[in-house]
Length: 146
Image (tube, rainbow, N blue to C red; front, side):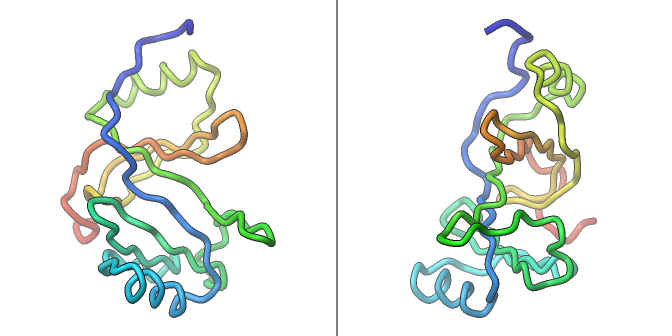
């Protein structure tokens, strides 16, 4: 492939965001059935995070007013908003240049929490429309140091 050198190395999946419409039921399943432990809570977004080993599963309740940006679920099961890929440290300008050289549009940049804490995220779409969050290491150890 032509273009710039990839400005980071992959660490793994940081988190997956599932769309739900009943937070109590969702938390019951992930905690009671799978044994996930509660993580961060974002009351203004209607999000709850649960630890699944070293990664997070984020539950986003579309019945909450703060979920207006969530991808609406498709009847029959397609209900993943995005996946987050954890990376090594990278230079933000190098990543912007790398993505541009591959004709990949940055949908959004934001400071968000994840399995490794608060850090800068770049959101892009793959060729099939799937939303991918590229997240470097944490700048803050958890979601409390905004």
